[in-house]
Image 1 (cartoon, one colour):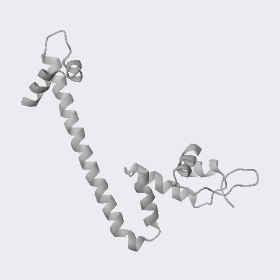
Image 2: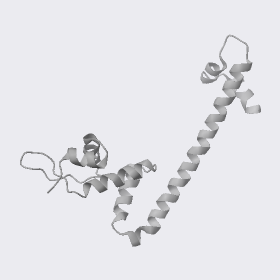
Image 3: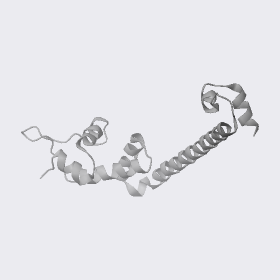
Image 4: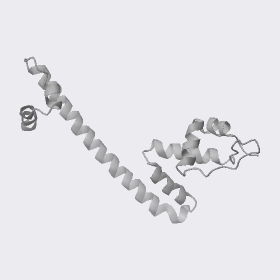
Length: 141
């Protein structure tokens, strides 16, 4: 017997709107409907939704998750493609970490400038407004 939307959502740890969204974007196939009009999901939908949520928690996009789902059904042949996807994801994460560190450094420099500058104008606001003198000063350090 199939599961209604609320049952799948509860067992998978998501809300019903998440299921509907996954249907709209093609992650979940549209389930058959009962005569009453309620969706009737096969029991394996719970595992599928959990797979998608775990992949999202690891940073995979819905496009990448679609690819992983397609590869999931042929694990022997899929291993090189999955490794490629994971390697790309790691490279993307490394880029984001570098970007976040650069943002952290820029904000720390602005905070230091705010502490040391004794004028009425806030150096952080000046920088966000595009004050070239502050930007040149922070690049020299």
